[in-house]
Length: 375
Image 1: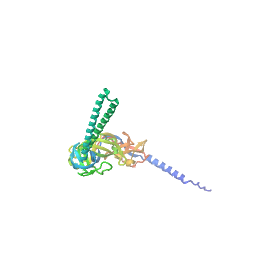
Image 2 (image 1 turned 60 degrees about the horizontal axis):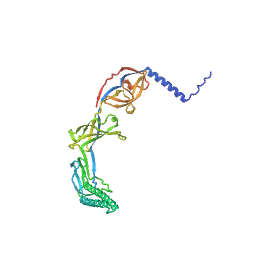
Image 3 (image 1 turned 90 degrees about the horizontal axis):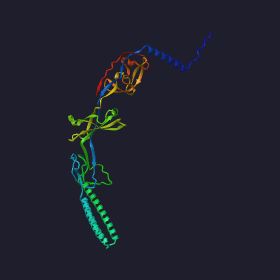
Image 4 (image 1 turned 120 degrees about the vertical axis):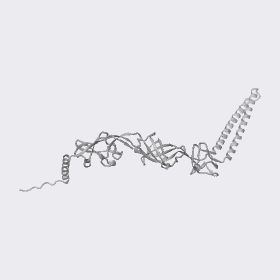
């Protein structure tokens, strides 16, 4: 009797059969040995968390002041640190030439008005003669034109005089608002050119600091929580124990910086005594309204970061479900997406041994307890 050899099989066919056998064995094992697990449900918790941010104190406004009228600086009336009111003189330019120009325009106006009076008198006299036919009507028309020219000359002279007086007034540079002098870049005798040249520093820098603002950058994860009017507390370490100021968010910038992934918030502080200085470091605590969020125990979450997931039970087997979570406290995380309030999630010691498709046996349901989280 001859033994006939089995026909050779391809390597792919052998691998396929092995995988089928392994899958059948694994499925049988999963079916035979269910893992004991517990269940916890996603619950709604009340979150009253605060938002912390750091930043810098800034003046309400800062103005770099230069004169409108160029020339020599005749007198400087302030120094760095001086407090001024709106309208107070800061420095004065040389005014001798400006005063002479004003006087010249005054004389020019007087001359124009005298010529106008003479033209009007001639016109009236010749109108009377024309009525008696002693002078031709053309003479009256010429005198009317002369009168109109004289009136225009008076208008031009008045405008020139007003301009000369304004230049003379502008030679005294005054504070545009109440504030404090924070820089002085000129002294008596300095020449300031107002045309064709750019100064690298202001003649006087003035800051309005009776109201200041804490400017902070807040992470974009809080963009839906902080709005204009959100209560805030500003802490300035440089002022010691008295450096706490209660306020609100006065300005919330709609633009989110794409590099830092944060947005700007400004918190105003009354500063009538000028105690808070621009440039100081500050910390701001915002207290947004309380809100409800879905939460889970940390023990139910597998993985970390963007690779987080949970196991849920479907028809007696474990199914892996990805989710996005955010830290709440040491025990719980907020469910951002992937689950809803009331969804059941597998937990307990057996979860560490679970894999997709494993048979599970629910031992007991974890107690769902509402809680309020404080910031």
